[in-house]
Image (cartoon, rainbow, N blue to C red):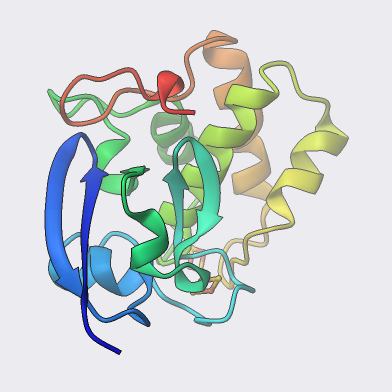
Length: 174
Ligand code: FES
Ligand code: FES
């Protein structure tokens, strides 16, 4: 099949490319956009390391073709901190609560938790545990991660999403 032209807004910046129909969104982000913070673990939808926001929804970018993101807005881990580099509340909580060790799973967790807390600003501990189920971590034993989610939820109760690199409010990207 011939390549297809796509235009995707990535962290507020428009990216145009001609891509093979079977190129995944994860590979598009990593190889065409040089945004390697989106990690690839299993490449078949299990580990969550590749999670990004697609029009505000947390999705596994290894399971989505880049052509499916044509016309969409994508937020990667590189777009979660504020434009001046200030960590988002979720990122700051992961740092404060030792929610990471090697860091391989962390971008996917931060993206997933960002979307989760946007939709559940006052979560129960059970909801937090359920939310963490979708991402795998081989290092931490999850306790620091669960504490980080609780800390992020309690830290503001409102703005857990941060802003993307253009200063655009990512809460409006749905
Ligand atoms: S790399 Fe996508 S879910 Fe594991
Ligand atoms: S911190 Fe190493 S996989 Fe989670």
